[in-house]
Image 1 (tube, rainbow, N blue to C red):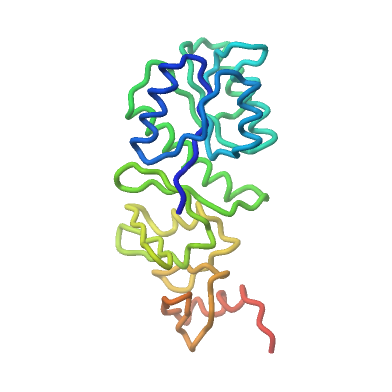
Image 2 (cartoon, rainbow, N blue to C red):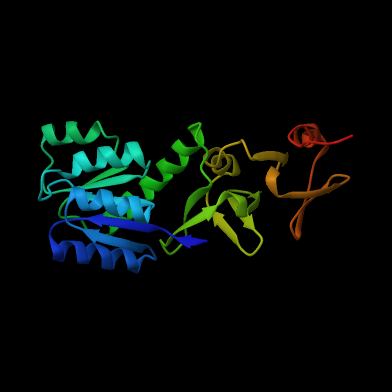
Length: 238
């Protein structure tokens, strides 16, 4: 699972370097620091970051809002605005570009982490609703490290009382939320419920042996009540 790549667009060098240090502290990678909207567009085209932190007041002909409008339209990348000002006119312009979040300077480290967390939670939910298929989601680990996880790496979800485990071949990620909530964010195109406690990735089913579903080196028990639904999602040659 790869670390999330964040591109910073900020024309004040000291502020940009401080933000970069805070991101790295939480396990995020910095794709680059740029001081103009024009430079940011070229960088996103080449680097394809997972998130852009965009200062609104930039030097040059293109301010942050104009640059963000192009980014969200052409590259579908989440943008968090950074601004010294929060006047109504600026907010109205920013809202039209549907940013992932908005931070007013000065902000502390907790504000930054919280804004990124909300941005990726929203990005996961919106991606599940859009017709354009996403091949990854973003996870927040216990120590506030953000990670990108390919959907195809997920074998199944497991409900464990008030928790949900996301199970891959090599690791399990535990979240203090319901399995249904995680399932909703993943989208239901590639995932199907096989048991009250399991949602499996249809693309990772290797074989069925009675009511046992084999997924890679792991296996889960399918209940009779969900058997028809699971089989209906498979292309079976008879």
